[in-house]
Length: 215
Length: 207
Image 1: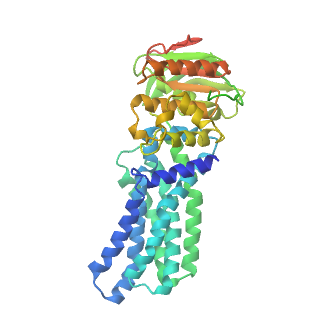
Image 2: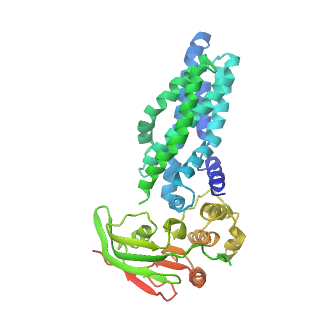
């Protein structure tokens, strides 16, 4: 009950005017639409450069959602109320991440389909690309929760979040971009492992960081 | 009435020779008091004397520099208390009604009397407005509804009447009286007396 209430609120917040889940998805769509225009119509070039660029765009789009994630709660006092809930803080953070994934991660993964087509990916590779982006967003959000929690008390902490989490974004980007060629091969399995590990461990580290922000 | 159910546990709060520091400077030291069921403790002091810090320490958010805070007979103090701070915890885009439902789920069992609470704080007619449309006093009234939808024995109120009109001040006094009538405890920080006769006054003086 508690977790459902949190999930509903977080999802509503992500899509409300202040949350702006539309912005990262729009950014991702815009970037992946402009890339083929900027690079020209050469098929081989687009096929080679497409997957890495899609994954960089997805990582940066995920980064956009993180800065205000806990900072807004800290500033308006909502964070205090989370500490007083009977639900464990780790679980609350996990639910926050899950709501963010559903509001931003899933639409962005689906937007990966038109992006893949624009970048000349073979049509039978599209399902693997969309699924891998969904997993990748779970990894980005799980890792990003930690950066967002650590920098919650810092004004304009966005740059700091980027510095903290971007190195950790490297593994999902490496294996995610490989999925475009590999299909459902080893790279996909490793990416799945990374996604689940990040989604499971990120909230624990983020909750520990948030407890330090309590005062 | 909103808080119609009994509390699971009613802790006795014991504060002994408490000292708090913020940013390396001691705010106050040697503060001791006790608050049992039905008590109303008023914390007074000048701006910056540490009233808010004392309440946040009672809520478990601040570590004491010296001394101790004990909740007798309770394993998890955080689940027996409400903290009403000067930051109201409101999201500008979310409706008043949704806030109260959320608090009922977050802090209670999700079956709190949401509508009754909104009626009690006088917001029933504007419960569908997003929080950004509320005046300061109305936002404070909305926060008060949180106290009613999740029954908890200890209320920590930080300047509860700030921004409220005369009717709002009466409302706060009535809520406090009703809560004490049910066996609850109230610890409130205030510049000037809120209304009810305190069972104990804690005067904070800067160290």
